Image (cartoon, rainbow, N blue to C red):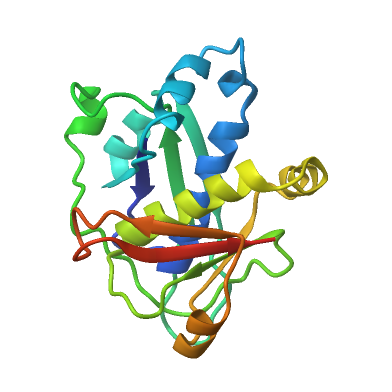
Length: 215
């Protein structure tokens, strides 16, 4: 699954808002009626979900961002909170695309940069009261792109495992998630219903637990 993050050079989004928007976009696409049995996206989603649920995060701005909106997918946008200080952070916007083979990709996606996607890592989540909480391993250092993909993984598995009533509440809440980084002791001491282990092919050195989810 390809994810594309809007990058505004003048008013960048915060990393935490990007991670939350990415998780919401992934779940919204999987929950979309077009991804259900009988829908036009069903076969592609089913084929991908039956294998390794790899996600690649790219970035785009300007016309390139507009161009990818024409491809099948779901875009989620959320505003940054008002923070004290002179920095004006922009909204986070992420589009998740219907899963497809890495090659060949549509030209609008293929020309977008994958590696080195960094956004300002400042502040905390403003998604108070969200149904799902996603925790990021405090002992790892990863790019915003990697963190967004891992939060998307955690949210996806949470959707698969939760009961129908909880999923209904989450859907009604727009699939908001609360992303946080716990302190190391809390991470070591407490488990969660969902645990995501990255294979370690890119930024991490070997299999590493990256995120957890609870509801």
